[in-house]
Length: 433
Image (cartoon, rainbow, N blue to C red; front, side, top):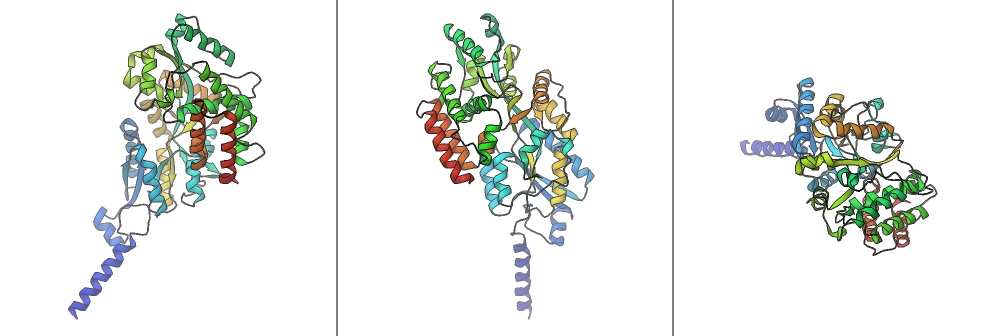
């Protein structure tokens, strides 16, 4: 009888342990109240994944501490995962319904892919829309439902060396013709006009996106994405490719740009050393300068992407991206608590700390940076009538990769703009219709 009882006891324990293998947001595999009490003092556990090291992580840790102080019966387990590994790890967790309760996303098509799979919790009811910049919040809103809270917001601008500009009597251009004059003058003086590190493809994609927006206005992309009459083979996309190839043929970029990686900093070094005068990049460039070449900041300035002749777009249409965006997993066992945590991670206090201590903008409304350089970016956002999120973060993954591939091929003169547009539209019909 004792042996029989022992067998039943073992089986019971195995069944209890197995209950923890069915997903649920926490890495703890024990789900009974008894086992939970033994492992963490009876507290409910929330798991939170993000990608940011350094001061950003410290800001998140402080937000988590505030949340835990307001919820003494809850323990938050934070996990920082490097960016390159994060997306794959989260995708695996999502597919197995073992995603963390709160996770880092970027909104756009990347998040929508999980939303369409039923993997992300609808947090519309717990979200105060007036707390956020509407254009930033829209990047995580699908069919009128909110699936992410944008803490971080970045812009895409053209940085330039104002010392070089002053030396040759140049002014920040507002039109394409003015930009060509700047480019030609720099070339005449043996200075690379525009530094480009396009091995990873996304830096060049900013140029393509900006030209398309300036030519046809922001409605072009929305129409092509939503299949509302215009496609990715629209004449405006062909024209955007022609503008790029015109710049390439004018030697506006550094030699071998399609083989230069961005992260290693070779493109930035061209600016720091005065070999190049401009770079189209996100505002994270300022943090790069402060870490890599702080003496260069006094030479640094920026302008918004120039308009083109006859174009429908203007300089209130600004390239941007959101991230981190805090989302809640559908498989969370405590989704309302997780939504509260997401709101604390996007609270006014968190947002102010985030912008003041990291030099970044925030998607939270009315958070004014103390840093003078960042304050100028804030003013751009305040005046913007449209924030165009990167195509590769908005399109479904398969189409996003083709967009980057074809754009890099346009830069390399390996593909005509017409060929690139045709490939994109053919794939769009497969993926979007």
